[in-house]
Length: 288
Image (cartoon, one colour):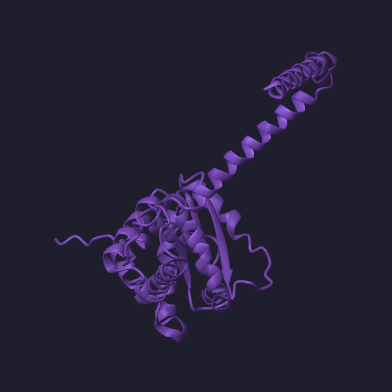
């Protein structure tokens, strides 16, 4: 019993010594002085700045991860996919070849402004094959991706104004969303969350690439669509009789080429047909 009493007193004494030691250390270590020193040296501010940057990086990373888990919106998707199709068809289209600046883009910009079409962004890809004579691919709103065949231009000896007229036709087709309307697969995935596996996504992209091929090489545009575009061209060009007259001359040149040159025998299947366009633009004869 006496031994137990001595043990309790000893433990109590040790505890008091420990508290005394902590108090002594607290007295020696002046925490308020350290905080003042840190503030004075700017270390506290640096730490807060680092923490803020870290939070910002984490937030940005979350935004990027969220964006990656969604398809681009419809306004952005077709620009991406049209360029993807071009890259996939590089060897067939032969657009990567040395060529001078033909001055087509600058003239087309001036031409559009002349007929009242401003603030249009476009790129023109000149290809070294007659496989595609001319075509416009869907892109972002107010933006256009044009394909133009160098052999086709040379075969017709096209002037810059002729080329601008052809590009305007293609531009109007994009404005009317004729390409998008011709796609025969569901596009409800655009702008939505990506839930499919890598293999399923590849299959989906492959299917859409085939749709591009079908529309560009086989389907083209039907008579109703071509009639609508021709009438729109008529409305834009009629105020300037000289340009309107040049458009008629251009259609006659194309009509003659596709009838006599086998390289362009498929032209009427894609754009039916220059001969009909001339007829639609001709003034109606009055019956007396």
